[in-house]
Image (cartoon, rainbow, N blue to C red):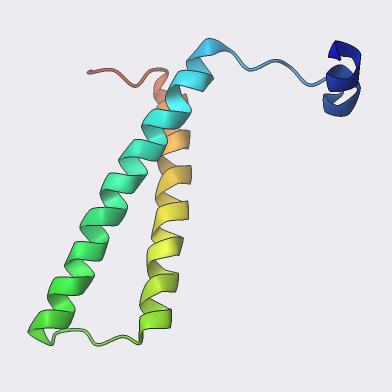
Amino acid sequence: MALVIRWQTGDQPERDERIQKLEPIATTHSWLVSIIFTTVLLVCRYLGLLVLPSQIALEVVVWVMAGSTAIFLIYFRLKGNAGPA
């Protein structure tokens, strides 16, 4: 079984413990940003400040989710840790 896994993944470097710890934290921060962004969109819609079709609003939220995940992942990798400064 180990040979099959090694054959499928190739000679990629193994992920260290720090990276495995940073990915869930970056994803958590991304979800928080996405929830706040979605709430702002809903409030703007309720107040009549911004009227978007539902498909466009959903696409914008998905792009914010993906972008914020990438940004937080890069930020935490450059910072070196995800704990308090």
